[in-house]
Length: 109
Image (cartoon, rainbow, N blue to C red; front, side, top):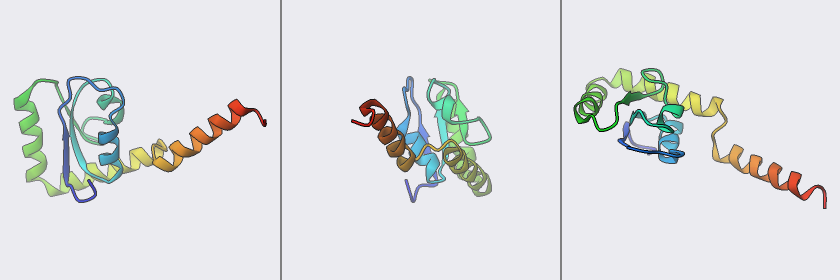
């Protein structure tokens, strides 16, 4: 993903879309289906592109639009990365939160 310009996640269902989160972190322009999980990460036309699930024409159109517009890919990719960093959805923050949780459970024992 560090070298990808576009990442596509045409899911019918998602829980926590880690691949999409990682792609956004690395500044990829992302296209994903509008399903729970994906729509919690992507703000349509701000941090990526959302299309209806199972709508292959909309998916193809969104991909084609990004292929044809390097400037749009760049804007979406930068906004996606900033969004992930702003929400502290990084590996480092995840480790810190888990450590804090375990320490709170341990209770100083």
